[in-house]
Amino acid sequence: MTQTDGYLLDNRQTEAGQRFDAFATLFDPTTFRHMERFGIGSGWRCWEVGAGGTSVVSWLAKKVGPTGRVVATDIDTSWAASAARPPVEIRVHDVGAEEPPGEGFDLVHARLVLVHVPDRERALRSMVKALRPGGRLLIEDADPALQPLLCPDEHGPEQQLANRLRHGFRKLLAERGADLSYGRKLPRLLREAGLREVEADAYFPVTSTACVDLESATVRQIRDQLVTAGIATDEDIDRHLANVASGSMDLATAPMISAWGRK
Ligand SMILES: C[S@@+](CC[C@H](N)C(=O)[O-])C[C@H]1O[C@@H](n2cnc3c(N)ncnc32)[C@H](O)[C@@H]1O
Image 1 (cartoon, rainbow, N blue to C red):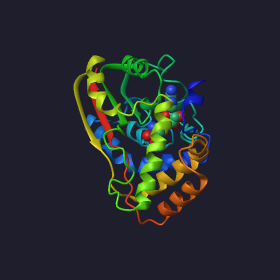
Image 2: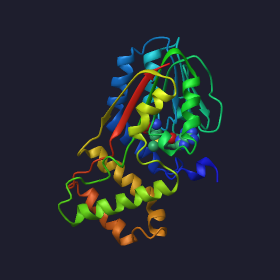
Image 3: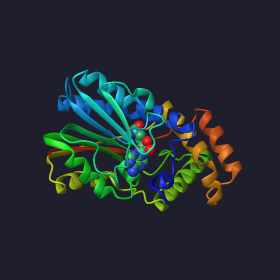
Image 4: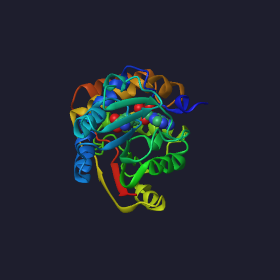
């Protein structure tokens, strides 16, 4: 099995674009706040790992300007490809299996990527190796085990169904090798990797229309796998999608833990 096959949420499906848009709405403000605090600016050299869509890559390009460099990598670059113009370079690259695509980076960033990479340890080592001395690493990953519910306020049958399907989705992710309590480990892993000034925080929305879009795209994307694994019937999924579309449920995400440090 290749790593692309092992990644449950394949980028090739159209829902992937909707998921990337929802990630941007939900998490870009947090990501950009951290990068601003590092002092990102003109001339910085950045590596965006597992870029997915274009929102972070385009923001980085604007910040670093024509004298900077943004290397955006992913095992599937089909969604990031439209951002490929200087200072952005897009490359197909597996962070868990290949050498870094350069060295001397001022900033290396991966969001919601490492949790899916089988050889996370190697990926982290590779990202640290690619930094210049004093360069910043920012890793952001979910910790679904800290907050596993799609509907923390489980007050009726709609919310119970939503949480049952969410539980099944987590099970599929875990079977594919995702570490569902990875986020909380990041500060320790960054220190063990030799970084200094390590800090971390966490964020998650408790209700948001972007969560509705994310849930709808995710369930449509993994529908066949949920049914095949016996986690839900087609009727369950249709009912859940209708409940989600009604806009009457408060949908949350897992906490996203952002951890950062300096080489
Ligand atoms: C959940 S998406 C997150 C995308 C983007 N970072 C964001 O926050 O919107 C995970 C991304 O990681 C990529 N990915 C998964 N395994 C990877 C690997 N081994 N090396 C590089 N990218 C990988 C996927 O193709 C996908 O684009």
